[in-house]
Length: 243
Ligand code: PEP
View (cartoon, rainbow, N blue to C red):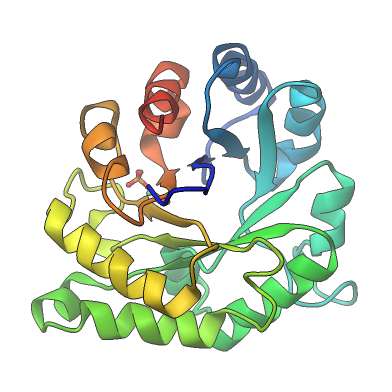
C-alpha cells in the first residue's frame, strides 16, 4: 500500500453475466461492501452497465466499463463512447486490458487515445500493462511495462486520478502469480514512472488466499480481479484484505 492512497479493488467481469445473475452478483457485492475501507468497483459487460449502476446507486460500490472508443461519437458499429458509459452510470473504464491488446490488436497509442476520451467524458481510466511470459523469461518485464506506461498514459493522467493496473499476461486466469519480490519490483518501477499519487493495482490470479500478502506489498494500491470477482464472497474477501 502507498500511505495516503485509498485502495481500489476492481472486478472485471469480462464477457460473463446475463441480467439475472449479473444483478444478483452486483447486489451481493453492494450488501457485503458496506463498511469496507477499500473503494470497490465492478466492471460488468456493456449490456449490464446501466442496470448494474442503477442497482448500485446509493451503495459503496462503483460501476465501470471494460473498454471505450477513442472518439466521442461516429460511424463505429458495435463500439461504445466514453460518454455513453458515463451516461449509463459508469465512473471508471478499464483500458488496454491484455485481452483487448491481444484480441483486438490494441496499441499503446490507441489506449492513450481512449484514456484521453475517457477523461474528457469524466470517467477515471484504469490502464492495464503487463509482460508476456516470453518477455519475462527474456528479462524484459520491467522495460515492457515502462514502455507501455510511456506509450499509453496521456498528459494529465495523474491529475485526472487515472489508475494503472500491472497485469502480467501469463498470470491472468492461470492461477499463477509472480513472486511477491517480482510484483514489488515492477510496482517500484511503475511508481517511479507515474509519480506518488497514481494508484497502482496488481492483477492476475488474485484470490482470497493470496490477496492479503499481495496487497501488503509496497506500491500495491489495490487489485484488478477477474475470475474471483464473479463470486461475491471471494471478491469481498479480497476487498477486505485491502484494509
Ligand atoms: C483480469 O482479467 O484482469 C484478471 C486479473 O483476471 P484473473 O483474476 O482471472 O487472473
